[in-house]
Image (cartoon, rainbow, N blue to C red):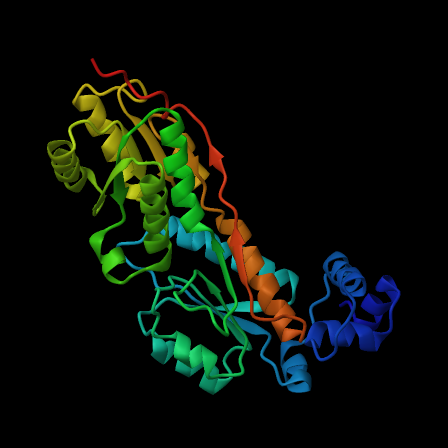
Amino acid sequence: MVTLAEVAQHAGVSASTVSYVLSGKRSISTTTRQRVEESIRKLGYHPNAGARALASSRSNIIALMIPLRTDMYVPVMMEIAIAVATSARTHGYDILLLTGEEGPDAVRRVTGSGLADAMILMDVELDDERLPLLRGTDQPSVLIGLPADTTGLTCVDLDFRATGALCVEHLAKLGHRDIAVIGEAPAVYERHTGFAERTLDGLRTRARELELRLLHRPCEGGYDAMAATLARLFDERPDTTGFVVQNESAVEPLLALLRQQGRAVPEDVSVVAVCPDQVATQASVRLTSVAVPAQEMGRHAVEQLVAKLGGRGSDEVVLLAPELTVRASSGPAPVRS
């Protein structure tokens, strides 16, 4: 079994420096900390959890709160969770997964029991009822998502407002003037979930600036719901030639229904999606899309939290810039006779 002294010798530092890197009790330079962490990984060192917890008054556990709702696309949530767990292990932390719908009660349970040293919260609403509890405790926390008021909070998210604007700009450059937005399930907007609300705000604001007509309709996803939504859209806006989809479960039904109606993609209508690259590239028509950077979001959240646990972090908002990848589903708007 590898000892702490062997890690110290391999990294070229003192045993106390290795101990401080593990406990976070003192600030260690980034270069030294990275060298120690690399030695830990190479040697396969695993500190005794019980002894380490007693010595540091820490559990070396991060609580990850990830409500698994039926109206959310679970694969993206789980990809973020896996990224959090993987990144946490490189820093010597394990993950306590909270999947219930307890809301503030779960926050109280974790902060009041010592179950975990810190928390990462997902599925953030604009006026999230968990936030007053986070602001009222000394326990470090990071949100993957953006509430309306970020005062006193550390947040990591894709810049969804810029994402919406980017989708509109792409379609506008191709000559599309009437754009329909296929949104998340109605319940997502009823909860004022941050990512959905901010994307919609970005879409609407940029459409007004570019003098485009934009119509947004939430959709449960699935073939029947998509069929009803699409019929309503073309009834209200028959000249629609551009679609923005922020609902992974609606992507394939939309493409199938457009084919059935004799509307070719992208010759007759263009489709842009906000979705994981896997969804975009495996669709029946390879989708022009803005990817959801799940792994990057999870990694950034852990890095922010570890910095806080080590006394180095501060409250800040990290917004990842969106990138649009052009594929086969978007093209010039058809010429109207």
